[in-house]
Structure formats: C-alpha cells, structure tokens
Length: 281
Image (cartoon, rainbow, N blue to C red; front, side, top):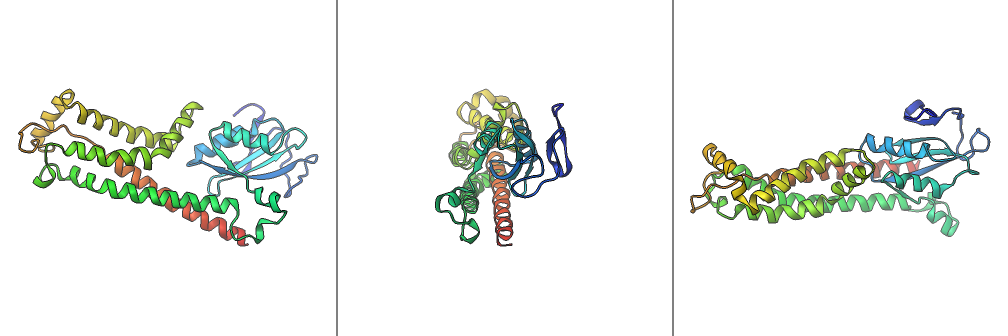
C-alpha cells in the first residue's frame, strides 16, 4: 500500500483526502463520478486486491473497490482527469479484462433493464457453458487414468507395457485444453510479479504432468524410482516383459484440473443466478 492510499470500509481502497460520501452517478466530491466495471478473470481475493490497487493508482481515481463475488469494481473518479477507457486500461494492465456493460445501451439508446439478456449476463452464460464443457471432457478422460493409477498393477487387464503412454494420451488434452485457462492466468500473474490461485494450480498440475511425461519418454532416467516402486508393489512388473514400470502421476494432474473446473462451474452458475436476481430487483 502506497503512502497516498489507505484502506477504507468494506475493503475499498481510497486516496488520502477523498470524500467517502457518494451517490449513484455524480458524487459529493467536487463533481466526481462513479462507475461500475464488470471484471473478468478474477479467481481469488489476491486478484481483487491487485485490480483495486491498479485502479486506485491511476490518475484521477479517488477510490476503488472490487467485489469478488459479483466480479464488479466500483470506481469513483474525476471525469476531468480520466475516463472509462483509462479505467479499463488500468484493469488490463493488472492482467484482467473488462466487459462493456453499457455497449447495448449506447448502441440503441434503450435501457438494459428491459432486455432479456445484457452483455454481462451473456458473458456469464458463455463462461458457464465453457466451464461445463471442459469439466465433462476432463472428467471423461481423467476417470480411466485414475482407475489405472489406483489399481497399482493388481488388475492384470490394466497393467501392460504401454500403460504410461495410454495415460499420457488421455491426460494431455485435459492439461492443454481443459486446464489452459489456469496456465494463462498463472503466466499473467507471473508477468506482474504476483501469485494467485492459478499459480498454485499450474505449479501443482504442471509439475505432476511434466515429471510423468519425462518418466514415460525416458524411463531409464528414473530407474531407481522404478525399482523402488516395483519392490513396494506399486509399479509392479511391466506387463509380460518383467521390466519395472516407472511410477507416473498423470492422474494427479487430470483429476485436480477436473475438480477445479467443477468448482469454477458451480461458482459461475451461482454468480449468474445472483446477478439475474439483482437485475430483476
């Protein structure tokens, strides 16, 4: 937190000297205006905090607050010093996106209140549908990998020389398609010298996947681990060849991504219903 900012009530970051009283639209602080921005890409409290700090450090912004539950940022600013485009640029500079919730209103001059679905509701619906599709793909591909891994070689039909390659083929789409958003989010946070929930997911699943790929492609590099797992009865013997099988952890990467997607999907559905209820009120 910089010297010229302070934490206000309800998690709102304010500049020193900013008036805390405001009404919808124009505020009581010298003709300042207030606007709500729909933020995309936030997944945790750290994300909301970074967006708040990026907004309040922008010239002309008096105070800013981000509600993670509704994915909205409320910004009080001086219209003579900044505008909506500058505020959106501040959000994007922190690694997140915004939705132009006033686009339809500007286009046809009608209020969004009478429409069945505005741009924000449409974006939430599309997000939910995308998460649902990715979850079912991840679940369908990860389930057989989980069964193979948890059998520990005790089911002969699932224990053959190329089983690691089968797990690699099944898990790769889960990581690079279903889990792509987590890696993009982690990279965006890294570029801004920060870490969030995406970082945790990317590090955990990425490590498990990359190790397993290396163990599958070059098993001789992990001969010690293979002998240990064979002695412990986890890796067993590689089918009819009698060669020890290197233990892999593809199921960890696949199942974690599937479960996180399930949580995000349920969260997106809940946010959509909440936003719709608020809009109807």
